[in-house]
Amino acid sequence: MSPVISSQLHRTFRALAYPGFRIYAAGQLLGTLGFWLQTTAVSWLVLELSGNSGTALGWTLALQFGPYLLFALQGGKIADSFDKRRVLLLCSLGSAAVTAGLATVVLTGHIELWMVYVGMFAFGSVAVVEGPARQAFYSELVDRDALPNAVGLGSAIFNISRIAGPALAGVLIALTSTGTVIVMCAVIFLGPALACAVLLRRSISNPARRDAAAGGIRDALRYAAARPDIIAVLVVSLLVSGFTFNFALTLSMLARTEFETGADSYGLLLTALAVGALAGSLASGRRSTRPSLTTMLTSSALLGVGTLLVGFAPTLWSAMALLAPTGFAMVYYAQAANQRVQMGVRADFRGRVLSLYMLVFLGSTAVFAPIVGSFMEAYGARAGLWLGGLVGIATPVALALAKRVQIKRRAAFDEANEPTMRPFGDACEPSIGTALTGKAMP
Image (cartoon, rainbow, N blue to C red; front, side):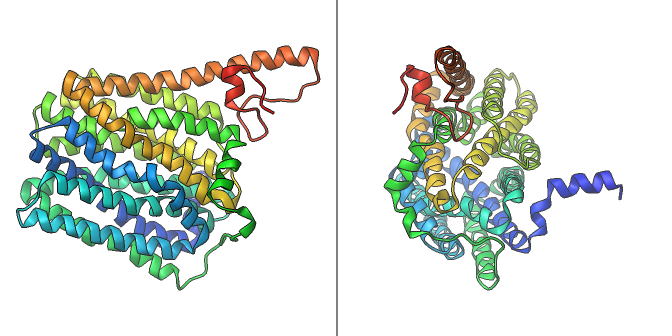
């Protein structure tokens, strides 16, 4: 093999050199495949039970991600307090149990919409603990210089499943039933549990030291509040994730009401999105340093442009063509935000700060998904994509303008005083509040 090609492959997949990461990645591949099979099957089930109601589908997503609003910080505290291998093992078993219960009522023919709501809330309650532990565990499996690659490959695994899962689910639903697919998901969710059981018998590369002095949830909130670079990530994630990252909702409605197709076409739309997302995961995984604020804002704006254009796509095939670059921008933005948090906080605070990030990134879905669903029910599926696209463009533009205003004010301040501040791109920066209000923080 050419030395150049070998070097590029090593750079793209260097986290796989760690045995613990390879075991963990194998388990995550199964777990994320199960997640996307379940997401597709449940979305289709809700549309069948509700008569194609966008509001009902929006509430399903809201209840699945709602626990992040209620318990996300507690989930982060658990991740920082216990061995993440044990936490993840128990969470995988919990996910399997919840999915098995939902499958039972579907197969027996007793399923009602409220039961789906209960099942998704229970599934989300497990994910509240699993999410921060899963994200923070990457830093224990690899060394710091390989962390961006580990996070990027974790996202690539997720998006490989995003490609295979919806397409496979569409075919399986057409051949069997939604209940059968959900049963398969319950079995597949045991894969991550097996991987964690194996890891419990092995040593890991970079185990976190649990420092009692790091305190609890309030200490983590104070730590994050003093970090304007983290606050910038949270502000963008709140709006972009809440209004733009609703493709399970918007694309299912687009397939069913605008293109008047079945579950297989919905799966193809999600697969097209995931093809681009996989490319974005691999591209972002090549980073070896913390991504800049500009990288995060630019990719967010491009995501907004792509989402807006998908809303204007006249046919299924044109929508699929536009979804590939949109998926690339989506994951490139999400990984830039994730990596800015991962690489910008102390190890003993990582689980709690990541839980705060996930509260905003995923919990915003619980707040905004019903709004987007109702908006589509009133104005059509395309309107939901237009709304998400406009928010995806406007949010980074507003933050970039705020940064520009702050730079000008700093320059004016420097003319009269000694320079003491820098723009909010790194840790030693004034707060976003300074940029938006012009008032210096004490």
